[in-house]
Length: 364
Length: 234
Image (cartoon, rainbow over all chains, first blue to last red; front, side, top):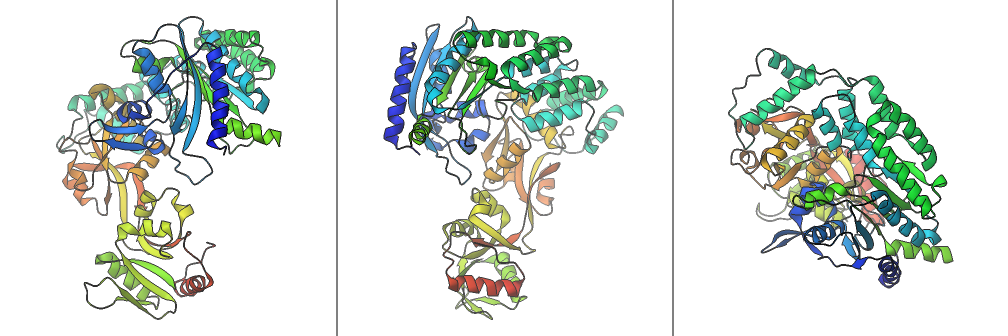
């Protein structure tokens, strides 16, 4: 791992480039309220972030990333459009013995802009690509908006689509749900018993109702289960198309052609595919060789992040190393943190320590 | 000397003494019943160290004892990457306890993790906060729920009387140790069909960080021949 001085020098270079690109440098507190991060990322963030107790402010976390505080700062009165850059330590607990560090620098660049999101996507990617070019990294892109559109376009119950959308970031659960909604997994034995009891007038229990979850909430879920049981499974054809989409991995032009083909049977994805097309044009206009740029439809599904559109990573050849840079579009996050307001946003971070290491190794 | 950590009191200590006794290694407390020191007969080079069972994972991880007896639940809860810090030598067949997820019996719509996940999503929409699960086994429960793709829950710490938290409105569900399920039933809670987080039992562990000089190493091999486990590479 690079000495902090070397990482800092690399960070200074990156920050200068981000400022030249029009970004305003911003700061964020190292101690962040835990509640906001927990509500956003769920309990898993506890395993990844250092939690500490403040006698007056309650549970606090050592900043696991900058995105949340930067979005909060922008939503509480930033001008539009806005470009921000930042530099500082982030802290991530390592639950496994490895060479990965639990404290490292991030340098980031975020764009908040309502117009031409494809051009903002291309701006961030091209900026990163140019800065990282000497390191010979492999770039991977994806687009979670296409996946979400494919799920929303399924001809099935809204409740099933909502359940699938909620688990796009948890591939294993997503697959289980798809198997069940597609009629490929057997109905669990206890569910079958419950459905039989429902058909016979409702399940009986002598147990007293304890806790906050009310009779009405239980009744609502029973009704949803009955509705789900009565609905036909998602057709095998639709499931196969969705799985084909999830497994799509190809250079961008071939991926786009395949997606256009898919959109004939899956018209719901056509607008998102159109945006991908526009993004590739915008990338090409900025000099990115899109012909060899990789596209993986499932890229970004396993991160702890909150991306919901274009996603990208820059990877070193060593698979044990974390991504040197990563980023993406997070329009929904601004709505969650914006208390009723939202703005399209895209950004990314670079690990200057890792970049400095790789640059050093390349020189040797 | 090979330092062997044994729980310092109660059933767990007695059963550990019995387990070693049945294999020709006599462990006993030295001096008065109040004195925390022990003696060993029947094998050379073994030193008995009496410790609170809850401290055993920490002492093993630090390598201050070579081997030790404690519940597998404690090791997995307290040690990150537990199997790279200790090696399980032998399950000992006592101290059985299951860490399980339980919800109110009146939740007729919830019987599996899949149900719990769906109920948690709806609960969060209705109540504005994540569904609370009371437990003292944070790591085990969180890893289990993550592996099974359950979301929209939060863990709330409960160091005792965990089964009462639902009635007291401080949690909606619990993850707790049970052997018969009797306490859960008495508190109107039921175990999820696929809610077994970990089946724990007393286990003999070796510390990877301990000083495995030839002396303790040969004592470990003598003990392994006597008790029938395979001494691992450490």
